[in-house]
Length: 488
Image 1: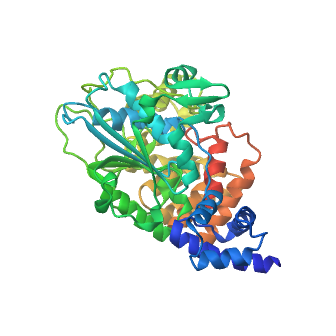
Image 2: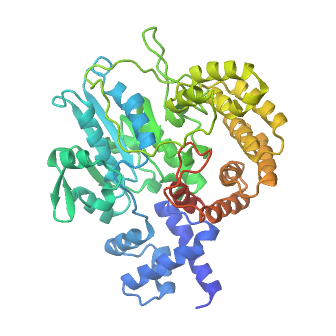
């Protein structure tokens, strides 16, 4: 069969599986789809007869068992416990803890949905976190729902048996408390497993929450690294379904890279310590509540953070990679320490004081700009960013940072212009290519977006997966490779 015939079959099948399952392959990824279809044909006994398989798929004539095999080959199943713990630690402190406050939640009821849960590591991670957070777990009505398209993933999830690879980011003491070691595998305790219910669910079929009781009244919906598989039209529909599934003040959590997708306008963006979460609405502020530091792109009221009743005062933290230290020289060490700890207001005060001492301290400008942005003061961040560009016109990083501010001010065209300057000065600036890809997607320039995502992938080959990229706020090369690979 010729290469053109391969492409033709892949294009036909791609349209069908996108509409039915939400599994979308861009034009650049049709080769990957062809390879998956070849594996499926072999697995189904069609002896690589892709034409026959394509006909069955298009006519919707696969048996239930054959369809499950196809789904298992088309979907990606790589995940692990306590994944992206920078996000989960913030989710714990600012979202879970208030939800477990018995003064605010006297019914002691909690509903969390992990959509696209794969083999169960994420919902079980949440169950462990909740168990450790609660002073008195008895008496609570906690229901965690894990859904996925792939039935083989769900079968593994229900068994609750994992290898050390799934626990590679889990502390030994957590493994000792919640797993039983059986040879080379680890079995979750029944008390954790019973907290999670698993369902096979096709998000692309647009299930209606009102007719599926388990999907309604969610306090939080986590759908991380899933929507990037979907076409833009499907993302809009699925996001609406999530919105309808959440409580009035419910939360929607996606991956950091997905926050650039322009499909979440129904929600209110809430920035917390450098991560953007989405909320259905914001409750009124009371005088007794303290508002935590906001992080870009939040420009609307943030959530409230005060001592919680029924929650342990010490919130256990789980493994996460530390953000790269800010490279500054004395006397700015204290300002850097404040910035790294997330005390942005104090960092701003100290940086301004240090900069008043002389022009030699202009190296603190990037930290000052990020601090203003992280407290939601985007106009100040923009003003200082423009000053930095005046002082460092030939510095690609200055133009990149300005683009970040423009994006968070909802000025995508201005951000695009800044990124063009950054890439002119440094064609290998990885984060500029990544942000340009996100903005181009938002502006409907999909061919341009693919080009920049491909550039990111090529440039990242020079990095080890565990390396944290400069200016990335703690993102590793491996994490960016994984996400960009799916978005190309």
